[in-house]
Figure 1 (cartoon, rainbow, N blue to C red):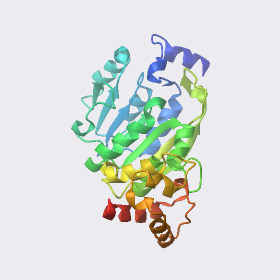
Figure 2 (figure 1 turned 180 degrees about the horizontal axis):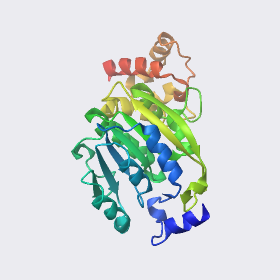
Figure 3 (figure 1 turned 60 degrees about the vertical axis):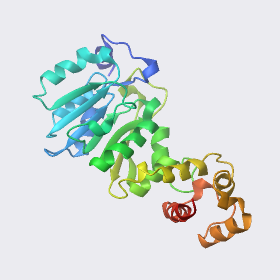
Amino acid sequence: MRNMTRNTQKGHKAKKSLGQNFLVDPNIARWMVENAGLNEDDVVLEVGPGKGMLTKEILASQCRFLHVIEIDKTLAPFLEPIVKTSKHRMSVIWGDVLTINLKELSPPPTKVLANIPYNITTPLIWQILEHLVPLGTRELLLMLQLELAQRLCAKPKTKDRSPIGITIEKMGKAQIVKKVTPNVFWPTPKVESAIVHIIIDKDLKLASDHSWRRLLRVAFARRRKTLANNLACVYDFFKDKDKTSKLLDYLKLPTTVRAEELTVDDWHHLYDFISKID
């Protein structure tokens, strides 16, 4: 691993400002592609390819086409040769994935495989859910910081419960499928990583529903406060304690319940109610 790391980082210095930690273990890249189950109908999106280790493995699969988005143009000497040998199965888009209009990717991606820069993980997943899922993206296999991976997969009544995790659960399911040690990256991060598999199979337009996202954002705004107290800051209905108590009783929730304690079904029923009064 030591020699492989030296060779992989040669000619390019990772940029801390971009959250760059290059994958240097080909076995991990190969594992991701094998477990993505790519076939000749799949169009893949890779974000932050770095020097192309995962990129090469994706192209070695049966996938029909690969979109690559990279912000760091100094990586062109590593990526452009891969494009030339891809036989028109790959395109590179240079820019910030958070400002690029993902809906314009053609053909639209069916799957996303990526070693995502840690500093853009949450906003990027929101963008994928909002803009790509309605166009056909159904699976994501993502390398993430372990802490963030746990947040995506957190169950009710746990401290890692989050708006994005609840949204994914309502749209499908997320599962940590592999934990990854820091030594497979260069520079070596100080945190552990994990590969998360996300499958989307229902409520395909939920992430673009601003009322749904507003509800979750308000509910989790102050985690130590009760759900009712947080909602009362925005929704007039919850300023009436008697009405709030009756609603929570109807939903079979205690008045002291906090946002992290609700199940996805609880959120569904609460959202239905708020949609009628808001």
